[in-house]
Length: 471
Image 1: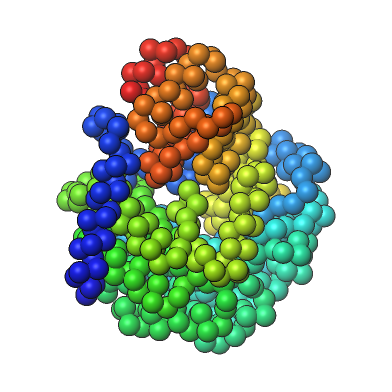
Image 2: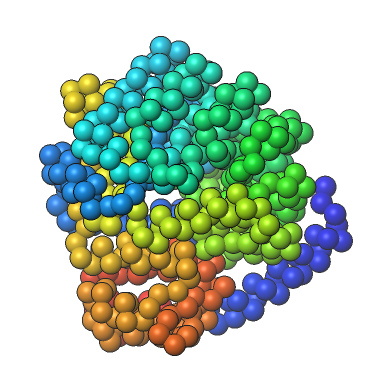
């Protein structure tokens, strides 16, 4: 249980901080903002809303080739779509119990997909980030895990300072896998979500608290750079359990913690439960209490946050190095290529997704084609939004003139939008910059989504629309 005095003091500070941050936000701002429509991936939301013609496969390949000829670096993702057990909140895992031969076949095909990308020029451009995600790559046995990582490294051109991350479940990241990976990757990201045993069991997580923390400690013994994912806003989760989870990780001196808002996706257990028995943190204002509690506590323990909800320990250089690598990729919109079933790729001018059908994905690659199921070529206004959303997530500011001249919208309407942010205490003017306040940073995904939807839907046309929606 958490230290009662420490928790009570923290809760008081949290509520005071939140009240101060949101004092100018009208009550109706929160209406309709909840876990059903909160999305960390604003770019995908914008692509889904886009009315532009979809890219055909050959057009997509030409677009990829053009992107590779114009960029100085890339980011690369390879996804393994399986988990031992499906978590109630996740819509990504394909199967809980794949056959050994199916996993072997998958690794062979995803490496062939990488070969196809290399034929388009991918290996001629150094990658500053290489990420093995899922699903859970650590579900693979030692031989297949080595085949995936080694096969990728052999086929890839990496920058000297490349961050190579493997996402893992503490339940399947054995000591032998830690040893195997220690000479191949330089960062491990663990899906912790919560250390509360009862909550973990309800959400489909395998290990109880004590065994979970043992595996986190073992990972820290083998890697200097370890990240842990933590979710807030889950069903049955209290402010106390959020605090206890973060306190557990801080006590182990975890250098990097990503603190994410739980999102509800159709088809998941959590989504169905939320429709039948909604819990308070589904609503955004209640979820913000959990966010501010975590932020206040982690900052008191020496962690710093960027607007993405990524907290790094100030004095641990490896965590800072990884964070700076991300900043460089995001602020300059480095093209991101996703390989594997259902993986998506993004760049300043497009968004693409692989087939979510395993058979279709494999069939395309075996035929020598990229397994793209869909793609969107962004128009000028959407390209502006890509730059805008990437930049403000990293730097919490944007040049006023950039907003006014590059958005492709009515200048007067954009001025009113900026004014609405200022009136709600979400942004302030600093010389030539519009700078987001702590309140704006905490709601950055909503502000991005509001602006993207307004631009794509054509609603940012007049002062009347801006004032009606935002004031």
